Image 1: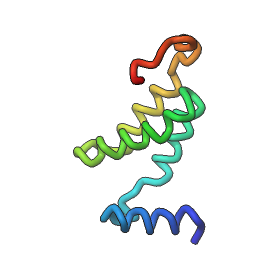
Image 2: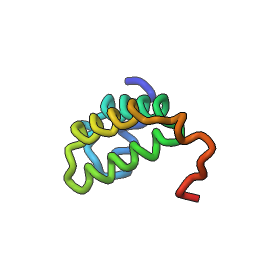
Image 3: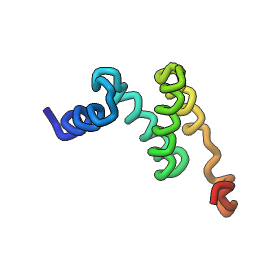
Image 4: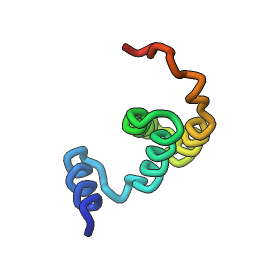
Length: 87
């Protein structure tokens, strides 16, 4: 067992979730795409959004694919210098 597995088991237990229900590779792939295609702090925020949507019944794999596509197509240079709408 590696450190990520141990953390997943402990954290999922605290959250009342079966660790087998967590699509770890899907979340990691999405976080990578957002961190590299948009902005690093967007990775955990997007993972949280994915979790919220999954909790509301969305298919996490399908949504992760859509969000990854969005991140990979994100025009990050177009946003340089703009103020954040969330401040």
